[in-house]
Length: 277
Image 1 (tube, rainbow, N blue to C red):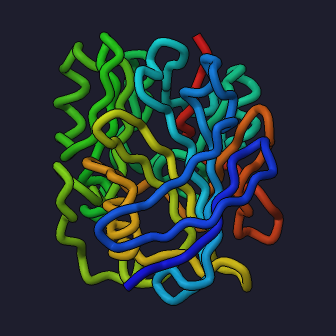
Image 2: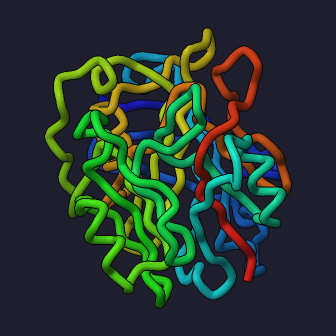
């Protein structure tokens, strides 16, 4: 099986044709890729459009922090001081260069329903009654700046630990050491929805938003998302809040994806932001 799709590099208007084979992704980059020969070459945004991937219409947006990106950029997780804020509003208020929506929250109260720690300070705890598979994974940043994606510990582990600067619990965990995790037989998993996730390859950190719930983008099930992430070379990957929350924002382009809510970008409880050092 082979999948064909188009990809464009922002802010340039080039559109290139790719061939996606389940076991590998064949890429042909133009010589003037985004911010070529500058520090910004380590931050790249790609858009993929396909009418055949998983026999469906797909629009996928990928923010990649490239090899040795830590020299020029840092990452953090944040929650508004009160209520909810749009990803773009939170990014602008923090003077970030890019960002995506974070983890799950109560749509009515705006409170996070998963553990969140910002700059070493616990901000939110995992709510009682939350589905286990929605908080079985974590992305964390150590005090030394190392980023890890993996199995989540209980909240008190992070509360007692002094090793982490940022902690964001979410789920389900999608990939571990390059292998797809076994997922629950639940409609959240099996039905196609807009998706947001984060993954690590051997040399990159990728933030991925999949559009959905529209005539031009059908979204993905989580098993489809797992397959796609493996083709990108992802080793460890974590699902984040999706649906109408799915948002990718760039300081140069604004909202990069097409949020599925009819009102447009949805206010959320947490965000993952990228900063220029």
